[in-house]
Amino acid sequence: MMKEKKKHSILKKIIKWTFRTIGILVLIFLVWSLIPLNQTIKPIKPRPDTKYWTMQDGYKIAYTKIEGDTSNTHPVVIFLHGGPGGYIHSEIINQMKEVAHNGYDIYLYDQIGSGLSDRLPKPKDYSFEKHLKDLNEIINTQIKTEKVILIGHSFGGILATHFAANHPDKVEKLILSSPGDLQPYKTNADGTVTDMNKLYPTPAKYQFKKPIEVFEQTEKDFLQPRIVMSMVCAMAFNFKWASDREFDDYTNTMASKFTKGMVADPKNVKPEEGGAGGYSHGFSNYYGNLSDIRSKLKSLNIPTLVLQGQYDQGEYSSVYEYADLLKGEYKFIENAGHIIWWDKPMEYKKSIILFIER
Image 1 (cartoon, rainbow, N blue to C red):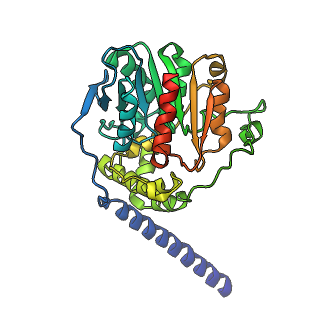
Image 2: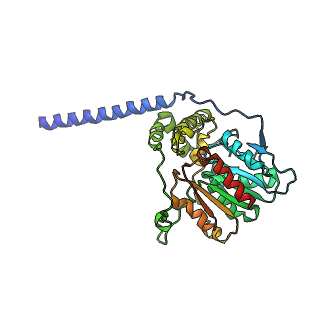
């Protein structure tokens, strides 16, 4: 009887101290999550040529316009940056200046929630559909043009493709630069995700190489109490635990590390300019009930160019799917990474200019 009581007493102590330990750890985590993050990268500043559109919902979107076509004989070119939560880097503006010299007005804008554009009040105010709606309003109401040439990079490539599928009459040509996986993912008749590598095996003539692995480190950086708490609060309660300034800075810091894996040669990485949008990055790539546009794409007749670097993080099969569905031209660029113009600026510009002038 005494032994049973002793065992019961020991068990109660173990349970009590286990709960106390868990409680102390939770308290430490909560207190730690209250400490604001120190700024590591200076936030982006407006450039002399930065302008703003006031959208119908009242927020402002920052853009740069490069004058090129004074006679208005060519369609307007719109560049859609990657991310989500990316921004217009000064280097891509310099690249597009060369394209504008051929007579094309070019607009480069920071998608809402990133760069110099406004931040929205709630994390879940951001969505893929909202970016599509903004693009449509920019074309119809802000620029007021009937036809555009869309250049979409990475996440911007997904945006450009969905816009073309839903508004084919507004798209003159489509250029997809290292586009992300087409969303939603392709599925089989039984509902399982299609193995794209079987559908589009990599041709032997394309010798892809793996970029530097960087995402393992950035995943570790995510495990900070303030960041974890911010994502939990954003997802569960649609509330910003960390301010936009903090979450943007965290994303900029993360970007300064993972961009080393987006080039063929790390020496070609450009300095981080501080325009990342943290909450936009976290919520713009939730595709929800996005409809599958593959059947629409097959019926389109929009001239399309798809560019992919040898060191791209995306797989050939996922990128080539765009060229196949749109009956477009696929171009493989050696010694270039995901951000092609950092490694091969001349080839990138030349490919775009030749295509739009064709």
